[in-house]
Structure formats: C-alpha cells, structure tokens
Length: 71
Image (cartoon, rainbow, N blue to C red; front, side):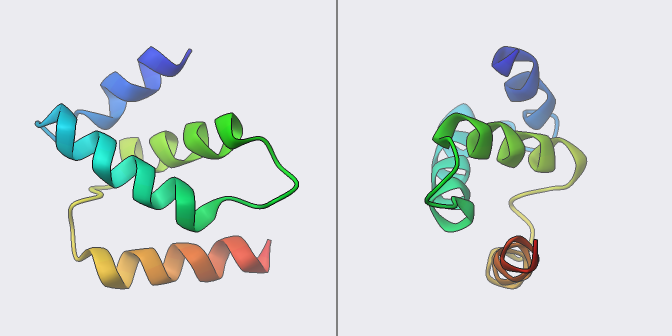
C-alpha cells in the first residue's frame, strides 16, 4: 500500500511537506507518457525509501532521468 511506501520514505525525510514536494518533482521528471501516474509515484517512493532524496538533488535527479530513459 502507498501508506507503507510513504512511511518508508519518511525514514530519510522528517518533514512530510518536504517529502511531498520532492516526490511530486521526481514524479514529474520520471513519468513516462504511456504509464500510470500512480505506478510512477510508487516507484519514486520506493527509491526514496532506499536513498536520501534530499541529498545533492541536481546530480541525483539527472542520474534518475537518464536511468529512466535508458529503461
């Protein structure tokens, strides 16, 4: 469920507002036109659970976009 993904992502980000802002920006950058937006959001939250989304954002965002385009 998405609530489990949100609580997992909160392990790296203590502020829920900041988590929402970061997740929405990442979802916009990673979303593919022919896929469901919900799946992209869930994927972003899974990535946030395994790594700190507030780390150097510009470099990580560029890497994520390139990785997503390669897939």
